[in-house]
Image (cartoon, rainbow over all chains, first blue to last red; front, side, top):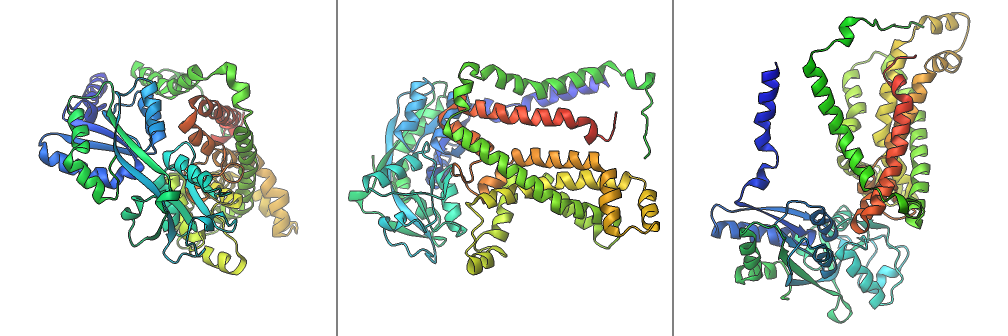
Length: 243
Length: 271
């Protein structure tokens, strides 16, 4: 009996954190808004680098920074804002970052557009059920900056943990409108209607990327790939701007 | 009432060493995360962390919604438990499975099912919205619904178990003495299961207090309206770890108090 238990424990040890000890797997923590572009970039990178595989962890950038600062085994951090990245830099969890893309905001409304929204000022109507990201998340910080820049008094119905949660609330037609990134509209074509915000009144945010201080060697080549021609081409096909 | 006395003999206190070792590992597995939380708790800042407007609002909202959810679960759950315990009908096993489903369903999935039913384009929700202008998502009522959805099974299984275990001859005697079914229920049955009923209500309340997934999915997250304590913990994690830990500590203290005071009753032993 004891032998059985001991051998069971011994047998299970190699599974503890296995994906992590594997030198050929790079773990990339990336902002939710990068989900589609980075999934494509990851596939392209793996194709060019046989034997190396990329594992993604998509979430709100501030949560990702918190995870990395708490010691999560991550090799690359791609943030949707310089503020979230700075928190990881301040904690000495990552090396110095560089910008690799830009994004701006847009309004997503359900296909039927129940609240009949045509531009930014319509969102100030208290009858409009508006959802935005929570303010610590980059898309939330950008949304509040957008409201302040345009002198809009806004009371959202919900502060969502990341931009995909905002989109979901619009897709299921529970919210009349949501503030999302321009690029997010490409991910849900046919499920929501996008309303563009003019550049003069919009908020542009920069996406930084870097490797963590204890990253595997291959992590650097992934960062090179993202900032290189192939990565940039894919990012732009999903609507991201050049840094 | 029948009381079953557990026989205490040598057989129950002597165990092979491996049992003790595994039990110790299991205990450590459950306790170490709690110790971690205590170690990281910024005890000095605790008073100020727990009195921020966000924390107070979340605490207030959590208390109100969890008590309402427990009330809803009780008013609807006790009759359901009675039907399950006393009636024989086809599809009873399926029905019991459905009643217990929220216990094992990921709460986020529970939230999605609530959206498809009570959202403003949902099966039922569309009529609420079109006819009465009621939109449950993003409202405090939506929070109560999400909490009641996940909490009710705790009450139903506790009460159903109690109803099955009591001696029905007392109820029969009351009936033969001319008591109406209503009188029997309120004067005989419910008093006989009062201990289990209270245990069920408190368990349902504790589960409602800790509800997260169904709430954020169905009701959203806005301070003062739908942001309960667990949601506030999740939001606080984005900005201040200390505040998240302080709020978690409150939840932990409440839950532990409830469970320690109830453990005997939940297991069915009345000492």
